Structure formats: C-alpha cells, structure tokens
Length: 619
Image (tube, rainbow, N blue to C red; front, side, top):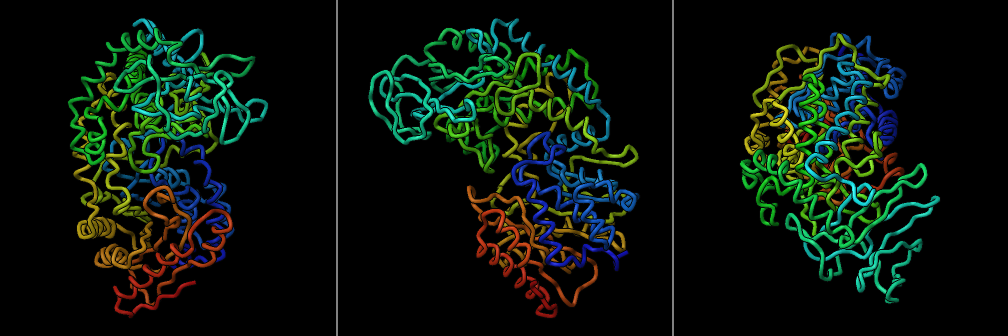
C-alpha cells in the first residue's frame, strides 16, 4: 500500500486543484462543522484530500471524495485515524464520515464536548425532529421562567435584540439594515442625541432635529449627555429592538431614556437568577489565566463580569429548563454546546461593529478585547415560537444548526467508532495501531493559550453543568498550565513526546501528517528535529491554504505546509509550493514574499537537519 498512495506523490497541479477547491469554505464552514466555532480550524476539504490520498493513488477517486467523502468509505474500513490536537473535531469528523475509526484528544474540555456533540448528531444518536421540538420547548420555558421573575426581553411590545453600552465614548453610526435591498444607516446626532435613519452613505450627515452637521463614524468619538442609566459598570445609551412589519422583523433603535423603567426593572428582577450564576463562576480565579490577567487590568475582575446581569439570568433559566425537561445524556451535552456557542456574542468581550450591524464575537481575532463600547446581546432573541434568530449567535441559531446537521444526508456510519476525549498528547498513546495521524500543534507564539480563549465558552458551560448536574471538575487554569509550552525549547521537547507516542503505534505503511508554518529556520528546525529524533522523516511537503490568524492579528502567513512524515529516511525531500501559491493568490489576498520566506525556512531547516545529505527540491 505504501507504494500506491497518492499522498506521497501529488503533483503541483493536483495540489493546486485541491487548494482551489478548499476555498469554497473561505466564507463559511461546511454545515456539519457549524455547531460551534473553534479556533484555527483547517478547511475540511484538506482533510478529505489527505485522508483519501492515503487510501488510493487514483486522482479521480480523490477528486470525487472532495465532494462526496463517502466515495472512499469501502477503502477506509478498518483503518484508524488519530489526531492528538483535535480542537473542535474537524479532523475526526471528516475521517469518521469517510469510514475511518477515529480517535481524537484535546486538553480543552470545551473542544472535546464540541467534537462529541457533532459526532453524536452525525451518527444519528439524536433525532433532528426531537432537537427541534425540545429546542423550541426549552426556549419557551426559558422565556416563561424569566417572566415568572417579573421581566422578559420584550419592551413596549418589541423584542430587544441588543442593548448598546459604553465605558466612555460612543459612535455616531449605531446600526444598519436593508430596506428593499438598499442599505439604511441608523445614526445618532452627537449634539442633541436624536436617533434617525439615513439612506445616504456620505461621511458627513445633518441632524434633522437640530440641523447641525457631524461626522459619520463607527468609532467611539463622542461623549454622552446626562440621564443615561449605568448597569454592570457600563452606561446604557440605546437599544436595538425588533417589531413585526408584515412577514419581516424590522430593526429600530431606541434611546435608552425611552425605556428607562424597563432597563431598571429587568436588571433588578434578573438579579436573583444572575446571582446563582455568580456563585458558580466567581470562585474561579480569573486572574490565574493569561487573558484573565489582562481582563482584570481592563476592569473585569471576576468571572461573572464577562456577562451582564440579564445574560447570566438567561443562562440560568435556560439550564433550569433543560434540567426540568429531563434530557438524556447526549442531548444535555448538545444543549450545553448551544449555550457555549451563544456566549461568544452574549458577553461583554464581544465587539459591536456598526458597518455590519452585528457584534464581532469574542476572541474572533484570537485575543480578547474589552471594547470601550459594545452591546449586551440577548441570547433569546428570535421570532416567537420559531428557530429564527434575531441576534447573532442567539440560542435559536445554534439549535437550528444542530437540526440541520442531524437531518443531513451526510452521516457517520453506526459501525464506525469515534472517540473524542480529554487527554494530553505528550502522555497519551492510542490503544490500537494507527494508520494515519494528523498533527496540528498550537501556534508557538500567536496564540498563547487556547484555554484563555475559552473563557466565555467555559463560563457559560460551567453554569449549565452545575445547574443541570453534569459532573464538571475541570479547572480552566489547570488546563492552561498543562497546555503545550510555547517557548521554543519546551515546544520542541513536547512535540518529540507527541511524535514518539504516535510512532510507537504507527502501522508499517502508516503516515504522520504535520500541519505547520513558520518564517524562521530555527522554528522549523525545532519541530522537524523532534519528528526525526522520533523516527519520522519529512518526505514531501505541500503548501496549501490554511486558517492562520491573518492580517488582523500578528501573523501575515495565510498558508500552511502539509508535511508528510514517514519512517524511511528520504534521499530527496520535495516541497510543492509554486503552483498552489499562484492559484490561491488569484482568489484571495496573500503576501507572496511572506509565504516564500516560510518555504525557504522549511527547505533550509531540512538541509540543516540532514547536513545536506537529503536533497531538497522545490516545485
């Protein structure tokens, strides 16, 4: 089999074709990977290409598998896939769909629950109609529980979707929506405070009330006047509400002073349930986490301060409704994932962005921000009695995605084993022979801690678990302390252990695939030396489009190298680079010089490791 696999010998043209195909996921995830966002997810198409090309040397069959992963299922039967840094489960899910028995571990409990829940949906352990029915029931019960305490997310007969809050200054451009296909901006005059709509797109606008001209900007440049309420350490200055307009739900933005009584009463009456959440969250030492220390400097000193009082009360009511309905174990875990996913927008570290009329979810750029102004997102915002969300990442949207996954024609066969569990890749050794492993280690410096990035998800999930009664004794700062070290020496030593554990159980024709990219020769040499000392050698490397941080974070690398590691020391190591890079640069922006510097670092590292005994060929 080792002679016939396409994985070892893909041409530059075919590699470029795969990369181009992967770009269909550039705008959004494939539906079955949409249950919960996890960071640095690779394109599912890349997994399909790797997993299929391990089983065959037929380009036609690999090409077919990119669209229909079931096309390769008969060849995958009995084969075992392993991923030691599983994350949200893209790899083990794709492998399982294709017919591989799949094992994935991750040290982060949030990631593991996401992967398990997605697997259970695709294996048919939970019925789509049951999720939809119980989801609607639980949302209704959650709303009823809030009403029982004297408040709801409705004001003046309208549904509150977002509440605009600030620590200081605010923008003049509040929100946007479309009317008859044309964009409408919702603006606030910084002089008299009048909120009005404008179909114009100019940089200057004139207030229809006071007649003064002002700059239209989504940046916080203007100060508020008097009379605005303060809650949870923020000043509330406006709210986006939804009201029925025929079959549509139209946006309106109200000045906070118009709904002052509702703001005060809902905050006060939500306090009882919110305090239940605070008792669960506040004993967790936020300052022990890397991002927690930074959040503390920004004024968020307790875990519960990541959320508003109304949001915490809603989390508690949702968990109580789930408990009362008596869901089975699989459904309970899936509904906890719904709440975790919702928390990325329903938290005070989301960032409102007026030009899109939505919040940018927390940690979207792999770091927490504490914005000067943002929104309090309503997790329950939806069209009444439907799973049609009226706010980004509302609970209804998570439930609806799960229904779609569970009802999809794409399934994991019942006789295919899928294991997703908490584990440390440095000490975990699979209990059966592994045919192919994909190693996608954490970024050495760009992301200092995935545990820290999980703060809002972990917080919402912890509240849910405590109320529902799920055993959850995982402490997040312990997870962070046990993550792979990010310093070069510690990282290299850890990766040697990871590679050695895999090599011990790798089948004779097995392959280990490394996803990695760095611009430094030393960094490349560090990880490749770890693999070589474990008995795994780089035979061929393919440049493909990855999902690294991108232009808004600290790295401009947009690609990643897929390095094929084998037990046999090569005489020649190929790097397939030029053709896939050219094809990708025609479709998306990337800096070819930056990508080329990474390729040179890889080739130089291979030469140095083998003292020029291995010829490096760049194609």
